[in-house]
Amino acid sequence: MNFQVTVLKILVSYPDGFAVMEDLKRDMAILATSGPDWADRTRRLASRVPDLDIFSQGLVERISGGWRLTSKGRDILEFMEARPAKSEPSLESLVDAASPPVFEIAPVSPLPQPADRAKRRRERRSAAIAL
Image 1 (tube, rainbow, N blue to C red):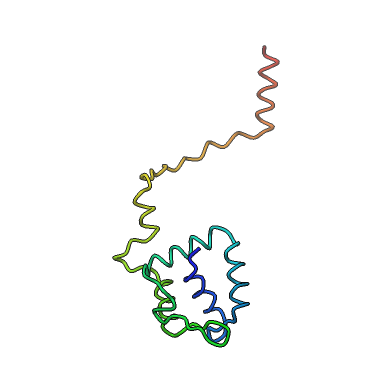
Image 2 (image 1 turned 45 degrees about the vertical axis):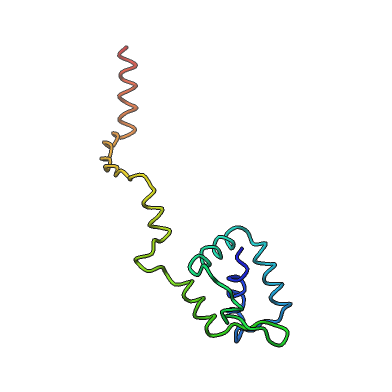
């Protein structure tokens, strides 16, 4: 789990982007134990801004026993969450490039419909009697 991205995501969910430390710690604990999906997501978001430092870059400020997301922090978070530009490879394009070619299966023509059930029974009976 990327700590800095998680802080940004938590703060953006609070009114005015401000949360006291108790709330931050609680939310962080919930997300940290939520499974690998959250860790994968934060890692993916962090990869869009490799030199992320929420305090030195002025994305988060410490005030009144808590932390507040700045407008610059909101902008960076929007950038990280935006869909990659066409020049950036997306996860889908990497997966598609690595997949083996897909062969199309020709449609199967419907099987001939069986004759009426009663007619088939009569035919079997008469064939058995003829033996």
